[in-house]
Image (spheres, rainbow over the protein chains, first blue to last red):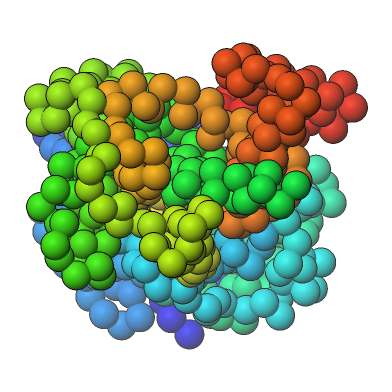
Length: 234
Length: 292
């Protein structure tokens, strides 16, 4: 089992402001999906930015991050670049990540394209077409025929075409009905266990967290000084 | 009847590289690539300028030189249009209009308004064939172009061009350089148009500054005809079926006594009819802002 341990992390947007996050201590274990909850503007996306390495200039980040028994030094307000290569994100609007006029298989292949596409036939798929069968996705199907939930699953699979240990999802079920939401979360749970991933999901859906992850829900709250704390729901 | 078929085939083969270029830029990349009209002229001019120097050279050397020159000429036009779009941040419609202006001047500077090729050996013609002496070499070019593009459409780069037209945001998300893909696409599209310009100039015996006029309409018509026949994206059948049916239609109209002066109008009407029929049948042709 791999662990992502965040210790004594402090973060502020610039020198003058109060701490945005103060002494964050939290541990994530692989094979699990975690749900992150909190009001709008509370800092869920900022927390993702810290893990992705997309913080704005002039921000201040201190503390230690340990992943898979490797210490990643925080230097120049950035966690060591090597951590970011393990982290992949699925954005809220998955339509920007998939090509509608092509088949599922072609989309999966396209996700593995290098920075400068070459004049070589498309490389083969790395990830698991077996899982996709369980969720009724045929690799030869056109993406236009997929339901919203299936598109979400496809976007996740495309993200996993490049080596990933930590997967971040920003409201993956916001636009989905109950049936599709259930399907996507089922898929994520299966995925986390099968390929030993840490999956963090931002969601507003309280029902969802109660059904799937009572002990794996993380709440971000802010106090009177506008300083945020991150902790598991007690 | 056979004579008519031969004319259709010859005309289609002459315009085949042009339609391939338009297929890449207009149909796959979904950009209003007006500059292929300019590439068509510039490729023709540049290659025609080489011809006097190549008179006593071995056939294969002369042949490869003119082909390469026309390709480079077309690609230069594409390069300018692409650079204006990518690095000067001018919308592509405007940058291709500007490119047409620029190369209208450059073509006249290097070659004047009219270049006659009569009096020189026709590199495409084989002496042993009396009727349609260029058909054989045109067929060879057709086969080579088809094979290269068939392979190209199966590669990472070929797919990327289609992705660019379908979802331009795709590349930013996966960290792929979209300007590289854009430049390659537009340069190869214009290079092919340049080649087609040379073929046309060689077979007609002259290159003229206005010979590119209306070529984009020809391409759009042919591509829409092709699309009604074959809908799959990234397929060579669309441009091939399109260009052959286009010239079949043209010759048919000629046969029934139609004046070809009005053919441009007919093209526009054909497009309008096809689009309206598809819309009223409640089964819209999967078209976009460019109609292809």
